[in-house]
Image (cartoon, rainbow, N blue to C red; front, side, top):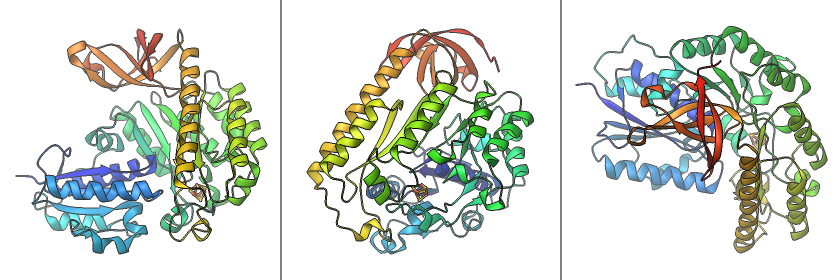
Length: 431
Ligand code: SF4
């Protein structure tokens, strides 16, 4: 009987792409990839270390994996394994601790553990791997690492410097995924806007988007997080030039106060961010813009925080990802006094979450009555309903059959539906 492996992911879209690579390795080693609800022989936790909370989630997942699957081999990998080797001692639940410095290590381990006993020659596409992990969207990694040194960020210490993947490799993977049924390709990276910079190329991400549009014919393309100074005119032209590129950008802000931005070592002022956000909003119809904000960075005074609140009230950002600051070992800001009290941090997070809720609701209201192209992701067969994600990153529910999951469907939105929209389909697979 074939052995089984479960892959659990904590963290960002780049980690989702890494988990899909692990699933591909597992299939090639003769394993079946199963969910954590099924009996399994190996559990791999692909962990994140960007915040204290991510560390905690990784440890909790590993402990639960051991409890739920007492006989399984439990493996910790990803940024958490790379950044916290000392944590190994306090986690006897874990059998193998594999950092990200050796990309072949997981494949070798899986082949050693056995699978069917012989390596499968069969290789699957990124899309097939993502489906095995329950993702309809296909995460295509375009680069790894980061050359910046934001004061709070542990990622460059864990992931190293920017390394872009060769363009032909990305195009090949995109074409194979589309052939296999992928209808959304999410370009991911640790710092995706640096794509090509290590080869001395300028605006290479815009070029990559145009190449992918040429070399594929049906799948839409979504960009994951892009730093503000990398939202160039060339990139905006590439996005605006095709309806196959999603009208959605996630642009990390972190603070709307210049004093805080400069202490964070972020290379822009709030005003520059605002100019970029206004330009994006004016260029891309129905675009949804998201932003990350950190609450309670060391030295963030009440006035600084109020400046961020005032900034958010005017800048065209439609949702926020809010993080309470947590000191990460080895970073510059970890040496500074973490001087915003836990209670104050909590209050600031609540204020930001309220702003997030108001912004999301306002954007949603403005999208009622629009025709959106939705990737059908989950089916609710009892109700003959599908729900999925629009190009501008809204959850939309509409009538449909489970066999249509994975398709792009045009939906006219008719009403609000919780944190998303409900609608009626117009026609099918229009791209
Ligand atoms: S740009 Fe800054 S926050 Fe983003 S990964 Fe690099 S160092 Fe971290």
